[in-house]
Amino acid sequence: MQAASHALPTLFLSADDVAQLVHRLGIPTTLERLAATLHADYLRWPDFDKSARVASHSAEGVIELMPIADASTYAFKYVNGHPKNTQAGLPTVMAFGVLADVDTGVPVLLSELTLTTALRTAAMSVVAASALARPDSRRMALIGNGAQSEFQALAFHHLMGIEEIRLFDTDPRATAKLQHNLGGVPGLRLVPCDSVAQAVRGADIVTTVTADKTNATILTPDMIEPGMHVNGVGGDCPGKTELHPDVLRGASVFVEYEPQTRIEGDLQHLPADFAVTELWQVLAGHAPGRTRTTEVTLFDSVGFALEDYAALRFLRQAAGELGLGQTLPLIPALADPKDLFSLLRAAAPETQRQATRLALAA
Image 1 (cartoon, one colour):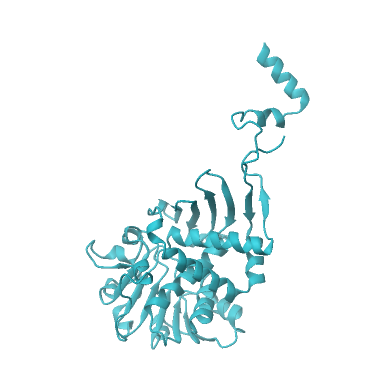
Image 2 (image 1 turned 120 degrees about the vertical axis):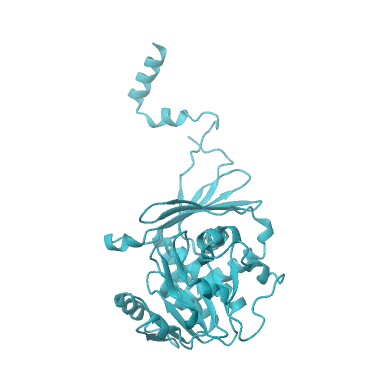
């Protein structure tokens, strides 16, 4: 049966496809292009129909849907967060996403987003830090050395010139894993530390990316030094935080989408009238970022659907350039779009079709 002429194929990108894409482009180029796409889409902030993600919480974690759309393209991401998954050999975060044509509703891309989420989160951290951190920043503390840590380290090294990263994790094996993976990166010095306080001492940028679903206090006010920039990446759902409330009170705080961050970010500690600035305002030149060298800036990052929209848009373009992925027959092609039942007739063996016709005629 021939597909209708207006039918659009769905491009499918597996985890292996995305890994190949990154390998062929190179990690620095991938991160650079992701950051540029994120920056460009944040500058189009008013064009998007935005909402906080829809979350289903359980005792062990959360499953979320993250939708967003502009006038031409709809996107969503399915993502979970289950910190205890690693004990069962599963990733803490698993994700996939869809791009669809707004005019027809046809899904044009179905892609893995587990690897991609780590890449886009790291790229987004750099987009924020480039606007908020001191331009001469060269030393970063990386607290939490799990699945996303290498991507954060490489993004800051390649895109912001970070030369030294001071590492701490409550699990020494995680730090050893990161050192093994990145030990050969030219110009990058990795320094394992015995505590959070030791890691952040003298750091220009502090990035926290821990996974436990708990109201933790990874950073306390006594650890914060004048001029620091803090990327709070790990806190991303109600009841999951990383920063003491006074760390936020002592900083200029920037967020992705304020209604979502007030529920999910470290901002959940503070009253509804605590002043924050959405990052797009800074990127567009509508609001100031850092105003003085000694100012403490803080990006309370929870992950927003616009970032996945940008990541999916990048994947579709790069996969087309590299000839990656396969066409997926996700949507049925019908000679008569009003005759959905024809799929069942076509799927049945001839003898069954005859029996069905007899049964219908009886």
